[in-house]
Image 1 (cartoon, rainbow, N blue to C red):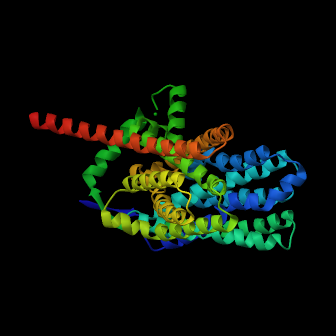
Image 2 (spheres, rainbow, N blue to C red):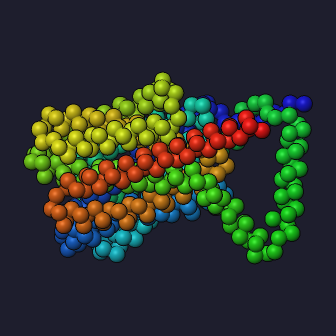
Image 3 (cartoon, one colour):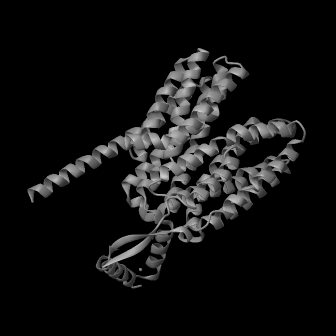
Length: 442
């Protein structure tokens, strides 16, 4: 007897989810860049040092990520919509409190902690929602979402620049707090996927009975264990800590954390490096615009490229990392402006492809019921890498007086990801080959 089951719609209301997620990310992603744009003069007036300003910004980037494991548990228990609503409250409240901040401590609490926590939670909720609504069309949905998001860092700074001509930094921040309140709209639209599931055939009844019997046996056993052991098992189940038993997942998580750390720092340091190369402000702006346009275009085309070559998300992500390494190395050797524009085009292509597939690597490996905690673990690892590695690169720059060694270190870190994943692929292939040989022998 064939039973039926409900599966994600892979479309339908899922496209509303894509638009809702894109709306929130369109606002949230530019926050890092806009903060420096708004408060660069205020910091000087308040007597805050460059080190303090850098610490506030890095804390904002890292804290929300470090709390990723908590976000995962909240998403697993309460769902995307409730977590997104809480995130919208923290995000908007944090930005509004930032408007009234006058000391280093106030900025750390308002922007470095509260706003960061809201940013991390809303990004986690949006990513999980898209992955729950889509399966076969997941790459297309993610491609559309990150393409729309890509216009945020282009348009929002223009809005901030316009507002800065008419209002004080505090006034601009309050207005931007109102803009952030639109994240509530995106959160409300994140309806539970259960409301939009479609019917599909599933396994025979006898297989379901066997599965139910096995689950019953297991439950009779989380009942016979001592209280302390049951408590540990409950914690492990809540946080899905059994994921750490999967060496492939651990390798994926560590590799992505290293690659994201390198890419984030390269993005932040690019204007400073171009200035060291002797480019003026207009040339730097042209470089960044070229990179940004190529980035957005290839965010849209990345799913079609992956579909054409029929490659899995992690392999497409690895290809983008290889292109990033090559273009960064060429960037290090080039000083001609027009050659740098070609490099900007290559960087934009790699970044666009990377941005889409970095959201799909873990969902392609982890079951959907464990995805919230898996993504949270990955975000937490990202946060630790950023908060530890960022200052390290700063020390290297101060000691050497050049960004060249920083670029070399970033490329080495990115290459480490490729090397880790290549070794894993070789080991898995050898084990499968040995397993096949044993089966043939028996």
